[in-house]
Amino acid sequence: MDRRLKSWGNNRAGQLGDGTWADVRTAATAVLGLTGREVLRIAAGGAGAATGHGLALLTDRTVVAWGSNGSGQLGDGSLHGHNAPAPVLRLSDVTAIAAGGTHSLALLADRTVVAWGQNAHGQLGNGDTADSGVPVRVGGGLYPVVAIAAGLNHSLALCEDGRVWAWGHNGNGQLGDGSSSARNVPAPVGGLTGVTLIAAGANHSLALVGAPATATRTNGGSVVKAWGHNAAGQLGDHTTINRFTPVEVRDGWADGVARLAAGGNHSIAVGGGEFRLKAWGQNASGQIGDGTTAFRVTPVEVPGLSGVVSVAGGREHTVVLLDDRTVRSWGGNRSGQLGDGTTSDRSVPVAALTVPTGADRIAAPIGGDFSLAH
Image (tube, rainbow, N blue to C red; front, side):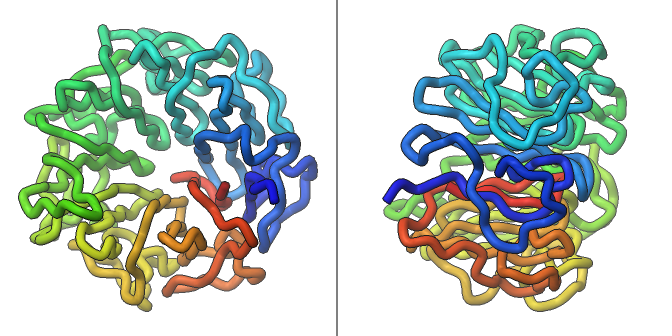
């Protein structure tokens, strides 16, 4: 059986890619026109409950996109949204993708980065603030890049030397350069070296310093750093004070950290050992997953979960992929973004996707209310 790319949640902008403009989908639907064998990576973006766009990196190293396009974030040269995948123009040799609020990023095989979509805050990194409906080269001498991440209106890149570069909106310090000034070309995050993983929330950023834990190697010496917006405690430093340079997330991480992710105003880390999950920050819709709606200014464990392979954060929900290839989700669900057949918020994990062939990857938009799995 061919495993298809699935989507669920809000679809008012065609962000589920199923060829319809159905209001919401509370259970998984198939994204049109893509066979499972074609899809290598997926990403989801959005800047509001009823908006969003999806990206898929294909085996031929091109990218297709669908959903909202008012700022050119689909990269097809127009400002017209569409409810099924279509190619991003002038783009090839792609190795990784990321989707922000209304902009998109791609890492190329030559270790450079291109971007397209909204650019009012300089989030495309090409030296100006004009939106672009086709990919443009990120400037500032950014090279060689090994990973990318996109926030609501800012962008991050991890370089081979372990330094992190950031550009775009900076009103909450999410660029980590000690200022609140926007940047339209990349600049290094202050005092941060030895980074191996990055993640971007709506207006905050995360980085792992030290080697990630694996199934056979734990690393208690790894440290999670965070910076930017902190009104909900999403930086995990036991305060709600915005930070303009990186601070340490307050937790022992005895077995190290294997993976990082960020939602709109919450943060998530997968620990080493049994690959358990911890989360912190905003929790009004239950997106922390600890059975409460209390905000958390330091990490708390999501009970009953282990074997977490991948994690993604939405605007107010969280999605995880387990090692049995099933998908769990929790948090806000008014658009059906948890995929459990209801529109009821959940403060503990529920089954989101049950298909005979399981899933290998997931995505959720830091500013939107839908989910993707493949």
